[in-house]
Image (cartoon, rainbow, N blue to C red; front, side):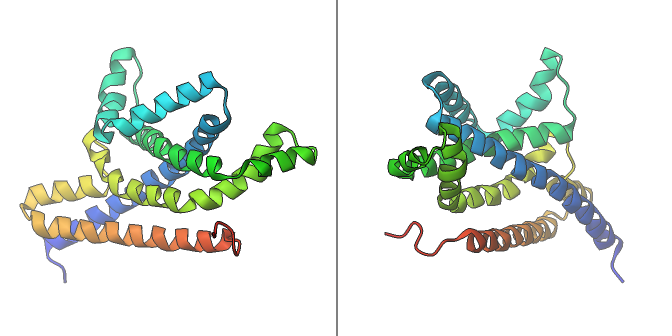
Length: 220
C-alpha cells in the first residue's frame, strides 16, 4: 500500500506525462514540417525568401527558448493576441525546433551533388519536381540523424512549458515537490520519466533510419 505522498505523486506524474505526450507529438511533427519548408527555401529560394528564412532561423536559434515562450504567452496579449498555455507552448516549440531542423535540412540539401538535379531535369522534371522527388528524399536520409537528435532535445526542453503555466510532467512534479518539500525524490522520478521518453524516441528513430536506409548511400 502506497503512502498518500506516493499515491498523489504517481497520479500527478502520470497526468503530467500524458500532457507532455500531447505537447511533444504535435510540436515534433510541426517542427519537422517547418524545418523541411524553411530548409528548402533557404537552399533553393530566391535571395529575398532565403534572407527571410535565414532571419527566422537566426532569431529562434539565437534566443533562449524560455524568452520565446514568454513573448508568445505574456507579450502577445499586448498586441491583442491571446494564446492558451498549451498553444503558446506548442507554437513556441514548433518554431524553435523548426529553426534547428531547417539548418539540418539545408545542409543535407546542399550536400546532394548538383548532377542529381541536372539529371532529373534532363529526364523532363521541372525544378519543383526535381527538388520534391529527387533531391529531398536523398537529403532526408542524410538529415535524419540531426533531425532525430533535435526531436530528442525537444522532449527534454518540453519541460519548460510550465513557465507559461502549462502543467506538464515537470510542472506537476514541481507542485508536488513544493507541497511535500521532497524535491530530490520527486525530480529523480521525473528524470526517469524523461529517460523513458528519450529512450523510446531513440528506438523509434533508429527503426526509421533502418527502414529508409539504402546500402552504400552516403558512404565514401
